[in-house]
Image (cartoon, rainbow, N blue to C red; front, side, top):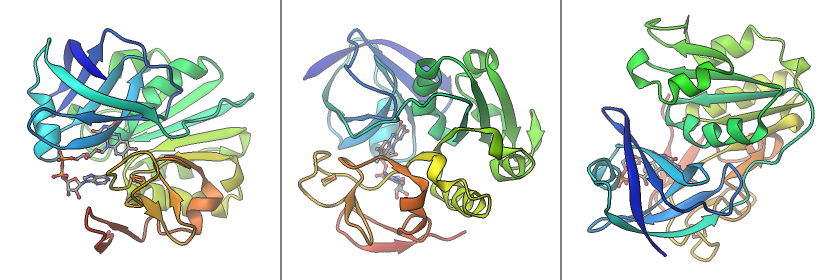
Length: 251
Ligand SMILES: Cc1cc2nc3c(=O)[nH]c(=O)nc-3n(C[C@H](O)[C@H](O)[C@H](O)COP(=O)(O)OP(=O)(O)OC[C@H]3O[C@@H](n4cnc5c(N)ncnc54)[C@H](O)[C@@H]3O)c2cc1C
Ligand code: FES
């Protein structure tokens, strides 16, 4: 479908939220394929029923930063499985732009939620006022706001055993460290973690988003997986580009 951008909010100089006058029938964690005029079609998570939030990292995302209110974009979806609601105490862990789908999740879960949200410097925080109303630990790597350190530093100091479910989205190296920590704490089964892979079709046909060794398609079986599955997968070890070439993650 083609949808007009109803509102544009610059969250920080490199991140934009585009609001549409349409509520996607969806659950948090699902994504849409966005066809940007003159650029590529890319996967982007919903940051609410009617918005996407994008960080400029390359050509297409940079173009999205410059789209104006009223511009029409092509959208397919929502696709993917999304997060599942669970009763009891919940912890939501976000790193960087990974907070985008988690903002929708936090609104959806509504209560019994603690949030841990880390970025490099204070300038990177988005949805700050909205999240501040929740029980949030803000973290910056350089100590410019909140706790100083990484998300992992804070998680290591917490009693993770009190949570019935832990939801995670963030950079792959953060996820890799979290998987190691959760394995040590024996809580991997209680986790739902959203991951990213290069996508072309978004609907399970092309195979570009499959993760080894199970061949799970991030666009259909994911992007949200249980931590036990991810711990035994390529996540944190390597990924592939659009032509299938393997790239080993560097710390
Ligand atoms: C399910 C899913 C949900 C996503 N949700 C969001 C979101 O809510 N907000 C958002 O800003 N981005 C999100 N992304 C990532 C977004 O799709 C990429 O940033 C985008 O495709 C980059 O396109 P580009 O042309 O701007 O950059 P490119 O020139 O294609 O890439 C720029 C750099 O980003 C890296 N990159 C590109 N795509 C990915 C990827 N999928 N995973 C890791 N690194 C990548 C490239 O290796 C390169 O180093 C999501 C990705 C997936 C798979
Ligand atoms: S993007 Fe084509 S199978 Fe997932």
